[in-house]
Image: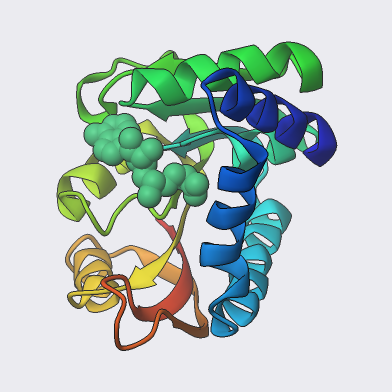
Length: 205
Ligand SMILES: C[S@@+](CC[C@H](N)C(=O)[O-])C[C@H]1O[C@@H](n2cnc3c(N)ncnc32)[C@H](O)[C@@H]1O
């Protein structure tokens, strides 16, 4: 699955005029020239592994980006249905294209999560790197409206601007249970805009 996904990604990159030199440069600038990124990559991978382990039933992947998590979840037996939503139409076009090659299970929606009317409810609502740039309380409130009584909200993100404490306070106000709240390690370094502790949190009613 990962191979098909990256083949499509590379094809798009080349079709849009990207050269092999540029590709190597991009890869080296991000992955190779900063040795600490290797450690970060493993943290990010671990976060996705943990989320994939926890997700079940009908799943909503909010801000699904290029769909890697949605596709991974679609291949799980205890995941009945996956809906990925993203407000960036180009990303959703990419997901739909890749869908034909990997799995027809996930459905993708172009749109703003806050304005979208969904059919039915979900057992798992996931925010992977989606809350820190958004109005987290509106997103969480909408997630609760869409959540089955026994469902879980899973958040994986970087703890920037006190996001983690804000979510805990939101949970307290709404009397939600925090079933998990773990740190996976530090992301970023002094020169990077994105830095903070990578965390995984699971909320339920
Ligand atoms: C940092 S990216 C993370 C993408 C993906 N979850 C991942 O882990 O690769 C955040 C994504 O959220 C999407 N997004 C931001 N606001 C949104 C909204 N209101 N509704 C739907 N998607 C949104 C962005 O377009 C972007 O693709």
